Image 1: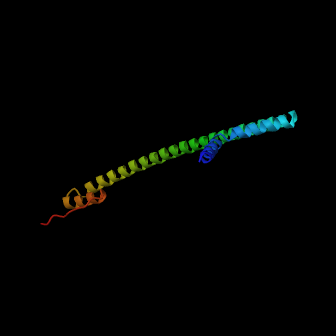
Image 2: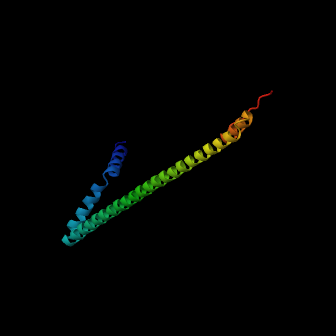
Length: 134
């Protein structure tokens, strides 16, 4: 039972601190093999570090580029939306003017017949006209 608990604890420690045994093995290897191997190991570690830094730099640059593109697209979208809204408002004003002119013409034409006037005004305003029963 003692050995099972010991091996479980050892395995858990190894899972969390795996790099310590690797470092110890590398140090033992470098002492045995001499200074040239030690130098090669440190060069390898240095190259790995440089590679990591280059990769981080590339990731930062691409992230900045995508953020910049997203911002540009967003501002273009806002400008286009404002332009469309402005055009819509102008067309709506023109439509209102046309309806007012048409309404003035209909009032002038039908000033003597109120039922016909009410029917035409309802048509222009897209309303429902209810006729009275006489």
